[in-house]
Image: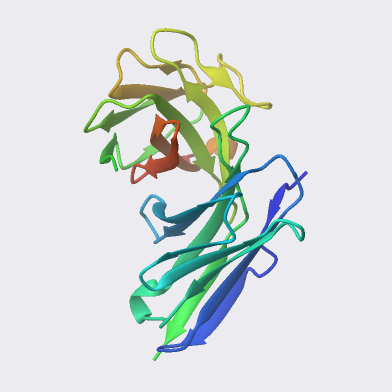
Length: 113
Length: 115
């Protein structure tokens, strides 16, 4: 049972344009969400997070939007840069019961020149 | 944030042997975790490494196969026992300070190939 889903396995975006990565979840008990970036042969790197009490969080070029009613979150990267090319994972947690993260399946972003 | 190192970074092992992976954090952390990432797949939590007590394993993972130690607040080991080719994977440790922070920081991973 995949509780966190990223339905787009890959995405290609031109440099300078906006990248939008999407994530859906099914467990309504999730109340904290995170995005990670992973380069080959490296561990995931934490990017940005959002609590369910917010609907938006911004950090530089990265903005995460949360739509609780739709159980949907998205990561916007503006402007996209070639160094952003990586696999992006969303993750969710139920802070009330455990600290373990449930990860999505990942989206491979390629930023082209 | 925390800086996490893992040893070894990669290894090729024979079927039936065991490998112990070490994870070192540069600061004391409340929680440490072990994950597996099989080729082309997402990260799957193996267990939570508890300091001073037995690890908490997720469904599908057992202590006899993946014994874990956590002797202090900065160090943990994961052993992959009696390996088979199906254990070929990337093994990652992570650390978390604990509430109110829920961000986990990951090590670089150990790429294991079992022949």
